Length: 81
Ligand code: FES
Image (cartoon, rainbow, N blue to C red; front, side):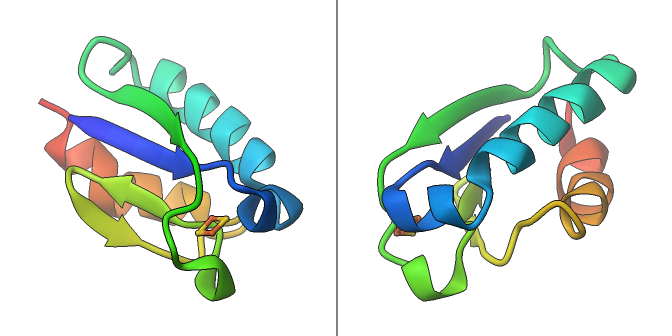
């Protein structure tokens, strides 16, 4: 599956780098490196609700250091096949 994180300027200011680093940790802790492809994207047009991500083609907003663990556990890990 593909997970895209917005690294546009608004999302960058809202901590997209932190989200990306934490996601990399979660992916390796759960040993799904070969199942989850991480990519960065420019502005996804949802700056007001950033950090924005696209998980398997679906827009997910409000990612941050407090929400990324539950986003991963609920919306990525169960589908990482
Ligand atoms: S900068 Fe991320 S949605 Fe615009």
